[in-house]
Length: 572
View 1: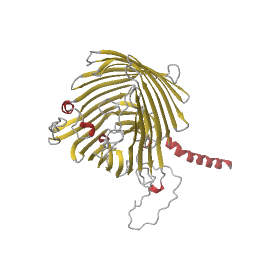
View 2: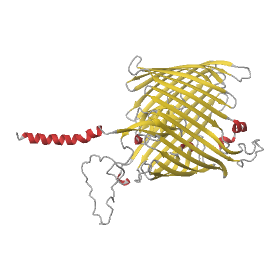
View 3: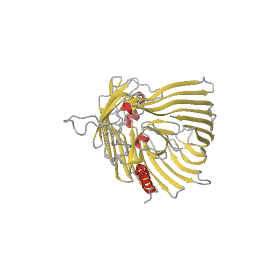
View 4: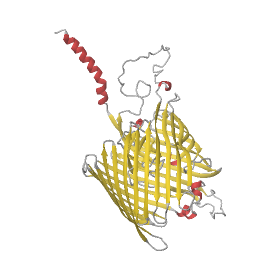
């Protein structure tokens, strides 16, 4: 044998050993999981979610959101940081409110979400390691074999910071009919998540913004309203899914009961094996107005939350809330939420809010004429939602039913409601929707929604066609048609949207037409036509910025208005 052969063989063994970990990583088993998400902030056409890479989200993943009192919508994740993500809401759909729950299917390495072996935090295959630099100290004869375990102490972990700075400006001029007004809105703010900056494995979450609204109406003084607000400002310890307990203090949305809204206080959770979590909290509830004023309403809440597995094959939550308004007992609320996925592509979701009235909640108010005990005594379902979804490859089908009634509460946003609305008002909705990907380039969607309340009823029928690659691989055309009956206004409408991408610049142009009839007028029904055109462009700025510009012009019967909008953000 040539003396060179052993050397070559040795080098081959070394190369194979070096490539083995990389090959093993590429071939590592993956698993699909369904992750629960919550909307923590909203933008002009975007929503911001409370998780990011930490649960496996990536750009291009679709998230299903379940807005209260409406059918589900699907949004696409565009930007992801370690602990948050931004998703775009399709044009033509209402942006869901903060606190909206959602879910996404993600693909991640098997066992992801659990601590790695070698850190004393889980089980599984031992990852490749270049060799232990740390040596175990001497142990006593009576010391347990598995103690101590070696995890990376918080002080040894890296500190991370993920977030964005944003600014948007909208200017609108209206000269239609008898109008003669200008309106502008300037918004600037920050949204950030910082982890381990205090060296305690903590997570700090901040969201704040400054708004300036200006209105100039003919023959009236200009109105200027400046508002600064803090939407989030909290620190959480033990936020990892494997931590046996966790606590969050500050201004936050409860991860476990986002339905109760924003909380200024504290919440704790105990995590048990088998996906069971038990906890509760207390605090004040800011008003749902721009300034986020707090102080009038305080309360306590508790919850039990259980998830069967990573796919959320079965998941359920039960929560209770008790509130006081300026020292007077106010709301007694029971919350129920459940999920069931009997098959891979079938999902059922339901939730409900049930209020309890003890018959002694109110005193008669001679000044407003509000009677005592408008709800009487007993339980009343205030909100209920049931949704079903089937995703069968190129075909999808969904159905939903919701019911909403107005609770009798002392909170400021409920005080001026007409008593007839509190005692007899309701809104019920049922709807079905379907989608079909006819080919790689063409997709069709259809929906039918029907609603009714205590006075009237109506329905909406609509359909969309998306055609990609029309005149170039990056071009797309969307055609939408609908017939809407909103009770006070009804009529048909259509929309055409063209999209193209030139390098990193995304361009769009659209046209809308809507003919509607206004009823319940003293002069009788009247018909109007509204038309609009839209032009827009968006592009990245450097590596971490985004810029979007849009122009919209409305015209038609008694319509004469246009708007300019700018959106700028920088991620860090």
